[in-house]
Length: 258
Image (cartoon, rainbow, N blue to C red; front, side, top):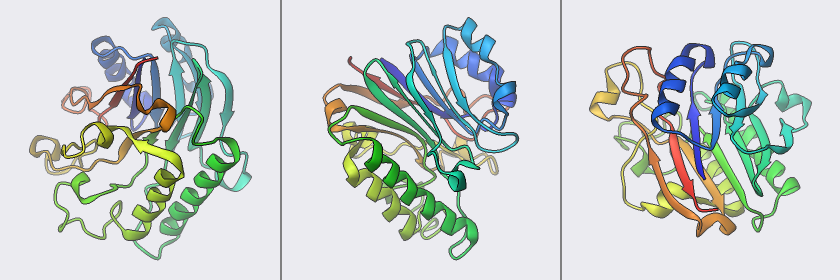
């Protein structure tokens, strides 16, 4: 089973590029973030023509997540079931071939002390509560998405330059680490403990061509899936397109033996 997580930064703007990429890199389960489009406008039929059924939790202009699968998606849950957090459409869950998939688009946050900074930390606490309420580390869970945190210094191109900036602040990293400690394994780092690989590059300054980025998109698995991991890699092809304009993220693909 090939699983992909990809922040498309607008499904409307990136749809053609996304389908071009899927022709080159077919995947079985596709988890997208930052759809920026209401569910009623999502291109369900075009995905269906490619062999995918999609479950979507999204809103106009901001946020939005979906799971698209070539296998049936069962027991779909949209959001946390929490009115405060679900005003922002950031999490969707479903069971596919016996594996629980949790697709997350964590808040970007802002400078320390701002409302967005505290909301990001609150979101992480709510996510941890959600995991504790609904799953066990002994369940086969694959949580993917854009977590907007570079977990370690190896995950940024210049740790000193970016120290204590958005995505590397101590509070953010600690919040993300509590998610890992609940019972997850960072699949990429598990397979490639010393490899430097980024998933996001700023549009400004041609950062993709200089490979000055951050690793903020993850595939996380619980212990029952650890030995099923065969590979995790970042596909730079869609990020290096000039036309149509790409997302600032690249997709991360995980290969599981099922």
